[in-house]
Image (cartoon, rainbow, N blue to C red; front, side):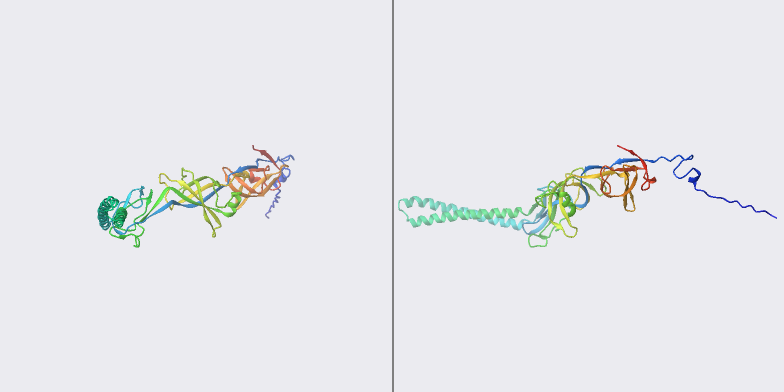
Length: 373
């Protein structure tokens, strides 16, 4: 007969083997967990805001012909910079040149008539003094001379106008900027009342503009007391721009003006800031990221970023009370300033916040805080 042996194993808690939970062998108590803590402090923090917008030109100039005629030449490359005074278009001047010649001929005739009338007047004056001619005849010669002089002035004005019209057949750039493609081609009839009343557009980009949209709630919080919602000079400071690839633009922006309407769809007030663009690095239509300090710096409770735990949308910290008890707190975060978080709620200034060793903590646990200055 075979004998079957049974062995009974009794599993005891590991803590009982060493003399109880939280105790060393021999009944000695475990020391409190050492944790590094920092004191939450109040600091004056600039109100940094970030905006995403598009770059726009400073202003656009429409190039419109002042006279009608056939376009005979263009003198620019589309999409390239042009300088003020540069020749852009030439309109056929022949018809207007004929008008100028006719005006000049009329002027010469008027001057000849003026000479004749002046001679008659000058001869009549001494004759009237000796009563050789009547006063009526003298008055007639005087009136003819005055009319001749007026005719000369009128003819001179017609010549000046005709010369202006001929000069308008050459169209020059009124500003510096980037010129768009021409809408008319050589041979098209251009001018007022035609389909080519506008020939092209020049965009001035020596300075570029960017719209900054601030939610009204934040604007009212940061703007403080201002005489008008349209007077926002000084509201923005340290205005910086970075391009879509993250490269920082070297020039600082400045506040220009506030748009007259508040966006009804977004509930935002739009401020226009401008950046110098001497090397034409910026192009209208580009996306840009703008950062700026809005309003005066406000006091805020700050803690190191490493002290804040972020998990599944929950932001929390561990706070150590003055009796060395650890407490779990949910917090509302503001913006970051360097390596620190702004705490909007959940932590008060002067409290100790654990910055390292939070994985081993549980609520109400006694710890040994090591304050880092």
